[in-house]
Image (cartoon, rainbow, N blue to C red):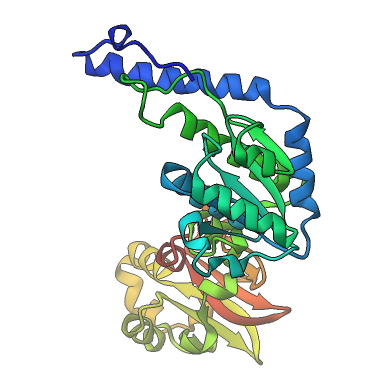
Amino acid sequence: MSKNSEGDWPFGDGLALGRRVLTEEANALQAAAEKLDSSFVDAVQVVLNCTKGRVVVSGVGKSGHIGRKIAATLASTGTPSFFVHAAEAGHGDLGAITADDILIAISYSGESEEVVNIATFAKRFGAKIIGITRSASSSVGKLADIHLDCEVSHEACPLGVAPTSSTTVQIAIGDALAMTVLALRGFTTQDFARTHPLGQLGRRYYLRVRDVMQPIAEIPQSAPTERLMDVVPVMALDRTGAVLLFENGALAGIFTDSDLRRLIAKAGDALDSKLKQPIGQFMTKSPMTIDTTQLASEALRVFEERRISRIVCVEGNRAVGLLGWHNLLQHKVA
C-alpha cells in the first residue's frame, strides 16, 4: 500500500479535507467492488451451508471493531454469529469455536499475531476459515480456506497511516457478505423485525393489534337503550374517550367523544332533550373493526385512510378491545 504525499492534501481547508477523505474511501470501495471474484461466491455458499454451527468473527484493533459490527449485522439478518476478540481467544474463548463453525478472521496485514493464532487453532478444530486481508500470501491468507481481498492503494489519511480506506473496505465486504446471504436465504422484512422488536421497523412488522389495543374489560360499555345523559359521565370519568354499545351480547355500535362534540355543536337549544334520548339514537352502527392478528401498522393505515378515531378490535365476531391513535403513538407505531 502506497502512502499519500502530505503535499497532495489541502491542509488548512477543512471542507476540502473532509471531501477528500470521502472521495478517497469511495474510490477504495469502487476498486474493491471491481476486484470481487469467485472467492466471494464461495464465502457466501460456505455461510449458507453453515446450518449446524455459527459464524465466529475475530480481529484486533480497528479490525476488531469492524469484526464486531460484521458479527452484529450477520446475527441481525438471520445468520447466527458472534464476535471473539483474537487476544482473548488463547485464554479460554477458543472454547466457543467448534468444527461446525466458520471463522471470519480479519487482519489487514494478515500478520497480526493474535489473529494468526486464532486462525491456526480454529483450523486444528476443523472450522472453516474465511480470511479478510490484503494478501492471500499473508499468514492469515494462507490459513484461510477462502480469502477475500481488502487491499487498498492507500489510506484516506493526510499522513497515509491511519486505517481509513482499509477499514471501510473491510466493513463493506462484511456488509456485502451479510446482505448476499440474506437475499439468497430468502430473509424477509418480517424476519428482520423478529430480531429487532424494539426498533421502528420491528414495531412496524412485529407488533400486532392485540399487543397495542385496550382490552375490552377496560372499555366503558352500555346498552343502546341507556339514556345519553347517563352514559356521558362514564365516558368523562374514563380516559378511553368512547363507549361500546352491546345488544343481546353482540356489538351494536360505538359512541365516541368526537360524536359527543358534534352532537353538542349541532343540537343547540335541543341539547337537553337529546341527552334524555337513548344513546342508540346517536351511536355509529356497524363500526370499523380490525382483527387482533393484524399488524398494528395496518391499523395505522386504516386510521389515515378512514379518518376515524377508534377501531373496534375483534376475534371472529367477538369484540375484544378498542384501538385509538393514542395507543399507536404510545407504542411508537409509525
